[in-house]
Image (cartoon, rainbow, N blue to C red; front, side, top):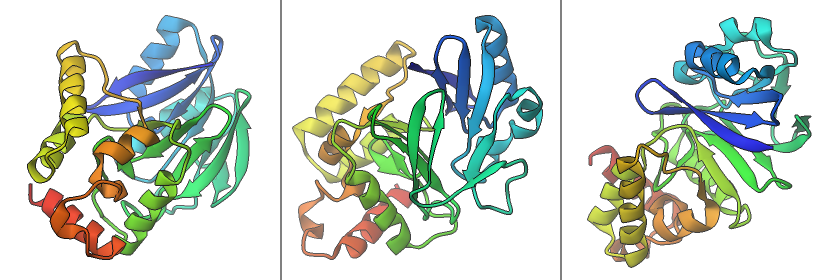
Length: 243
């Protein structure tokens, strides 16, 4: 089993679980590059995993479902048509022999979920956690998104983080504006190098994010350290929104 990526729109990644014959895809917002990938690599689409209802994550369901041999898995959301298996916190399922446990991660949207595989040490976290940042709050509260990020921060450090946007450089530019830190600077430089080679900066890891991502509240500016977790998170999210 390997994880491939398909570029979509300006900065989306559609993640692909690939066993060499079949694939399961995560958040196919655009069906065209998925169809091209399947055709060029002679692959069969088994299942589709959906993290939340935003159009750039679900836009391909209607065209891809007719060729999907398995099921469409996703949250209980009135904004998504085509879900076969509705998932909630702690639900378990398998696709292509990879076992997943569902983590509810509201905040970016109220229906947001993530897919964690303990055996494969990875999490597909949609738009909740980004490398160096986190999703904007469109529907949830600061408490909800802060709590969702702490759920992800509590995963093992070795867990690979597969988020769905290439926001790393922009996020790190914000982090560098509020924190002077060698880990952040080194990661920024290595990420710049990958981008210059047209390579994705992802996946990241939970351990790395704890070192460079203030939204996980492990490394924060001095002036915020006396605040509660939620108040600290609120100040960081507001600052990033205005960056």
